[in-house]
Length: 75
Image 1 (cartoon, rainbow, N blue to C red):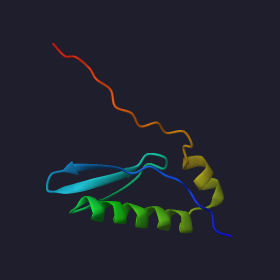
Image 2: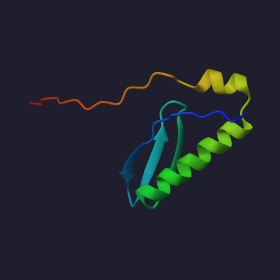
Image 3: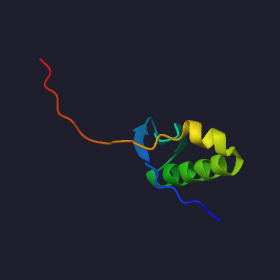
């Protein structure tokens, strides 16, 4: 039986490339485009789930992650 997970990918430009982060597991990857960073993160997550024990998955997996924008005034 295969498990399915709905996870978050936060991708941002860093230098000449892009960094992709999954905050639920604190796993990151990178690529030279948004699409490549996304694909590399997906691969890293798949490898993690293949290799990690159920206990490690449970300990690392944050089930409530909220992504929102906020506005601040400075000065």
